Length: 401
Ligand SMILES: Cc1cc2nc3c(=O)[nH]c(=O)nc-3n(C[C@H](O)[C@H](O)[C@H](O)COP(=O)(O)OP(=O)(O)OC[C@H]3O[C@@H](n4cnc5c(N)ncnc54)[C@H](O)[C@@H]3O)c2cc1C
Image 1 (cartoon, protein in one colour):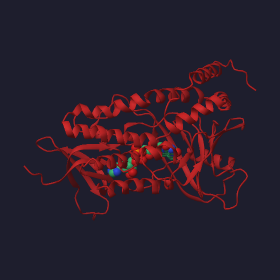
Image 2 (cartoon, helix red, strand yellow):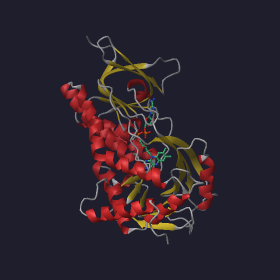
Image 3 (cartoon, helix red, strand yellow):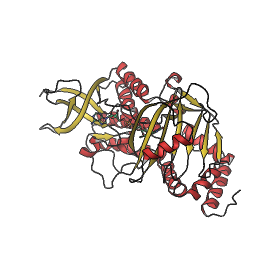
Image 4 (cartoon, protein in one colour):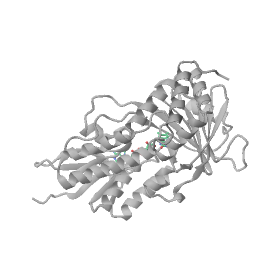
């Protein structure tokens, strides 16, 4: 029997990097796709992406607002280590235009966009998905819109309602709360500010368990901190960071915060017809808080899994999204989790961590891993040396200079 509701092969909730990537991939495979986003605010984000994102997701360089050629690590003692970026660059994006560009690309290939808030899911008598949304531009008296679909992708971010309603979890989510201020950079060049360099601050009064950052975005900068400690004032810490980097008087354009999920959920699908991607699935890298690349990859893997499911009708295909992600990046997430746990827990350890960043092997492996998302296989001795030095630092056996 024909449905009274408009039908799509796939409805995607969330038009951030994960949802927009999934929409683009699916529509290019001939699927009828609805991309739903409430678009009530700009996603709070430092905007740093590794160079490999451009190639892997076919993005033009013009999407970047700045190219970063070095990172300066600041220790609790204020000693600094500058790590020149080798083998590429770190790109900076402005999330307002970046997300919109991704959504529009999907639309230009045939996806339908809808500015609406996802409210919930019901099922028809035959078990088909009925997605309930409230259209943002509709008059207040208008009732919810109902859409029918064969597959639902939840790409609705760290507080995913799709995950909450459709995919019960065994463990609670693990978050870092992050806050930043976007400020206008002074016109005259400041000695304390380099527009091609990221600053990463490891000091306990800025963050007791994560870090603070200053990321240049061309004419503006993102200045912020993250922490998992609920009682810690991230606003006061950001004020302090602005003082330390000489940008206290810079004009504030906006300020905003959001949780960053730091643990992949145990389940990404409901065993039937719903799958998660990106922050909704909990995939932001521990220690760095990097989520854009992993969100886009998650969107792509959800799209691949969804296509296989739509073709075969086999719900087990949806499991491949998580399986493929964890097999490519699970080990890196595990290592970064340990790194965060050991090195970010006291100023003494943070001092050791920044000192370790002076090591050319550490720098090379860091940039190769971050920029290209590949483990460095060519030089096992470098891994061994880094592992040895890490262990000595951890045990307090390394000599401090
Ligand atoms: C302060 C901060 C700084 C960060 N800095 C960086 C960085 O420098 N580099 C980096 O790689 N990562 C960074 N991250 C992480 C990164 O922003 C996220 O990992 C990434 O945005 C995840 O993409 P996503 O598409 O999964 O989710 P999101 O980008 O959160 O997109 C989710 C979308 O869903 C929509 N949505 C939510 N609920 C509903 C609903 N009920 N109905 C309809 N639509 C809905 C939202 O409007 C949003 O557009 C940072 C995060 C924070 C909070």
